[in-house]
Image (cartoon, rainbow, N blue to C red):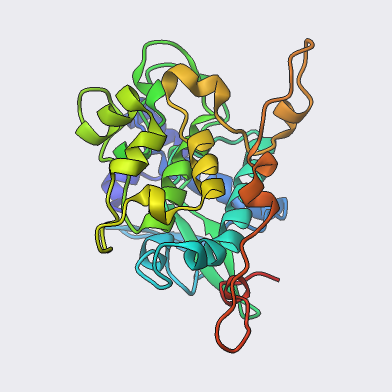
Length: 293
């Protein structure tokens, strides 16, 4: 990063850019703290080095790239692909739930910020880029993350739960993993026709109309399993149904206070409880080929 932008310390940066949405020193400090507490889903911070031109944040290597690159790999969308996704999705949900239980909302989860590392022949998820993360549970008028991943309630004037914006982003991640495509370009109303269609007619009907990008005319409703569709519907609940959005099983939702009911989580979904298992000609589980243990 340019040294003239990142400055020489967190205090200098905060003084120069008090309203910045991307906070590089917060990213560095949080990764260091996650390393200290033994959080296994972050890269290892190796050091910060600077000269007059640039500042370099060096971390351990995630050997297999990011989920964006993974999405171009086989199998094609369908049951075999869902089986390959399952061990990665399980890790992602676990990793983000752990973050939330530590009091951290990431707010910029995306295919590019979820990396893959080869560990003992399996794929391990690593989360990066905590520059937009927050320790505050509530926020108002703070637009964070990439447009297609943003929970729609962040565009409203009312306060929103920062923790519950991450499951929506993960719904977009899962959609992209399963379809090799993005569902929409923006969740800001009257900006993207695809998201407007979802708001008007619902996500299930959207899947019946949306065609597989690399297919032969099949709709996504034909390609996605019913259980996977149900998981997506729960994660991608929009602003007026945000209270119905699936949690990741965080402690604050599993043990609700003041007599409120426990909210449904991703772990209640059949897709998470009964992973799809398909076999290749040699009898190997495609899920295991993607890193399950």
